Amino acid sequence: MKNKIKFCKKCVMPSSSAIPVEFDENGVCSGCNTTNQKDDIDWGRRKKQFHSLLDQYKNQDHSNYDCIIPVSGGKDSYFQVHMVKNVFNMNPLLVTYNANNWTKTGYENLHNMREAFGCDHVFFTPSIDLLKRMNRIGFQMMGDMNWHGHSGIFTYPFIVAAEKKIPLVIYGEHGFMDIGGMHSYNDYVEFTQRYRLEHCLRGYDWNDFLGHHDRDKIKENELLGFKFPSDEDIKNIGIRGVFISNYIKWSGNNNSNIAKQYGFKENSEEFDRTYRKISNLDDMHENGIHDYMKFVKFGYGRATDHVCKDIREGVMSRDEGVKIIRNMDHVKPNDLERWLTYVGMSEQEFDEIADSFRDDRVWHIKDGLWWKDDILGKLKSYGKPYLSTQQQKKYES
Image (cartoon, rainbow, N blue to C red):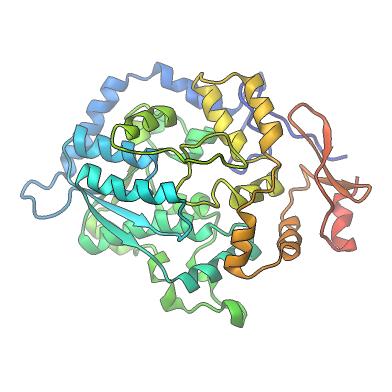
């Protein structure tokens, strides 16, 4: 039998996590241990450090923007702009990558944000035909149809920074640190091209989308919005990417409360795969079929991510979280039909491709069904495999 997946004793993070995570001698994950550092930090001092950092980049003669803030229109985007514009009196340029999959509420929040804060806003939209091809290629190549979205938000703001010679780009939280504890808050980790490629983009880049067959053929000049600026441009302009969460205590729930003061709205409908209605509204598939692929690959999903955050913030008990993820993590969401129509794919073709990405630390095949341990250590089955006989052998228990 395969090694069983471990789950954090404090939150519900599994050892099969899609991001790097470690467990201490007490069975507590690195994400929880890093979160605990927040209680020992002098956030007043950190805020002053951030103010000092921003002062270095403030355009004294008002001839340019002071910084760039990549935004999706979500609660965290509102918080970032609130802090930078209204608390620290900077003049930011907002930059958005449009993945063409907005929820109705998410789209309204994005446009309201520009008006609520009175900021200039650059909005980059690749051609819809290109996005469909990138959806198909990304799904087939790495099991991630939303790769272009990850690339967009971590690439296009730097393209704008290079073009307009704006040296400071401000992100919210460092996701790998916030969720998995990849770094310490004392590291003051910043955004780098290496972090973008190896972690945000999982080692793939724009050139991996070239050379595919006729239906999905992509030319290099179609991918200009996905090419990170050259090292020379970054160095000459001195472009720097920083994370607010190193300087201001980060809380998704608190960010939501502040965002609502500016007109931010939570989703009007329940999601299939998470209980939160304040997160990931910029892309209808982020909480849905894109996240379902995480369950297929690693055996957990968005509900687990959100439960971990809320347990660490002390607004949910672990027992409450366990009930939620047992009910939601495995659900095949109803937005699948929309995505299949969007890219021209059958559900069986989707399942065949999805199955090829399953992690054999998590999944095995028995009696013609997929099985895995859930968080209570109970074996559960989750439908039949769409694999060739040869492919199935490595999963047979």
